[in-house]
Length: 181
Image (tube, rainbow, N blue to C red):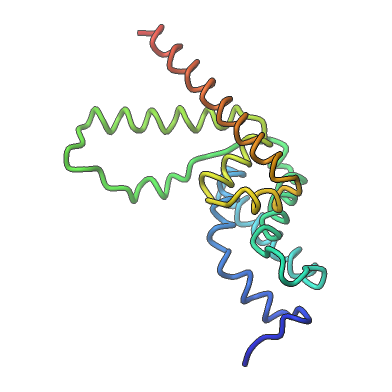
């Protein structure tokens, strides 16, 4: 039986929201750097979205709407005030090294991941979130604009400045590491 999208219902909410669960959880993990906090954040976001589903405008971008709810919940939480980011260690465990990988190259790769993670953590939240939404969540500029409630031009500008800032941080870390040798 098809679901009518003229009048939002709990079943249409479930059909739209459940396929996004893993993506929202991964984004929450990036933002909170804590599994339990990420779970709480996603649960809170789904509860808020279900309560406010009647205000969702059918035909608009549901994915961006859900990400905006999660982001706003994060920013208004204790955790959001800390502004931290972590790479998901669980995902890294599943990556098998190439056959030509040496212990030295594995060590360098881990050091590079840690350096990028540290540099991301040093970025201001508005830079970090635009990078994560674009590079990790693979959202389009328009989806990011809808998620952050800013014009697409602002997204492009922030993304440019965020990448430049990240490059600068990484370059300083590399130069600092060379001096220590």
